[in-house]
Image (cartoon, rainbow, N blue to C red; front, top):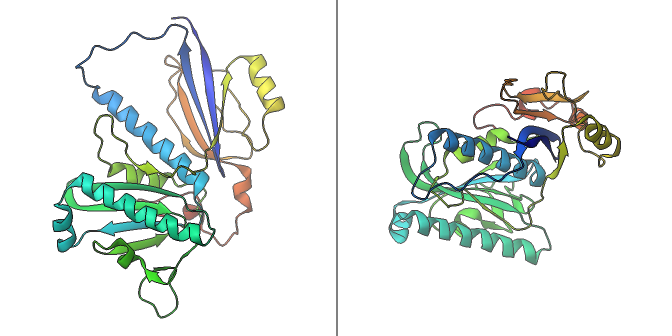
Length: 288
């Protein structure tokens, strides 16, 4: 098959990624209608969804922002008739109320929200609940207060359907672990979004480079400030740039040729040494 090898390079805050793939000249034929995706394709789509969400979280959220878990009590479940779509709608109304409160104070509000009825470990069905990663500028827990407030009003009251748990995002360079936690609970229906993003989320920097000697040299010579260097081994394997810390080095099979790496940029070393390394890298199942 004719085509060319490409590298797609991302930079989201302190995290860099490079993916090597083959781009054919001819467009692939259309798949016959009525045929569902294979399990291998579904797994690949799941991995890509985690990487996309991790880039969004890395680019748009920082320590001090919040992971909200919105629970439905028994009266709340009856009000929504235990319906997933209705719960999703009520979550979006809640996020818009938060957005309005932030706008009145002149503060930017960003969010990513999703509704789930899965357990994050076993994937068994559980009570409906919602997860939202939101800007935490106006969310606080005053001394002596037992719950988090937004402009002096408890988040539980703003939600109105049950309890609202709050976890502050920690000092991490990479929120991939949080992306895994959220994506595992998403309802993966055909043509349905796994999460609802706000329109003002920051986009990671991205550039495509053809994998020829000249193109790689030109990219490294003229790359935008902050973008990672592109390095390719003699066997076609992607190499981690100098002074970067490897987070994920995917299996490389020369006969196939595709490869993926994720790493921390050198700027991540400037974090205070008091922050444990396993927290900075985002390790752990629910470490947020």
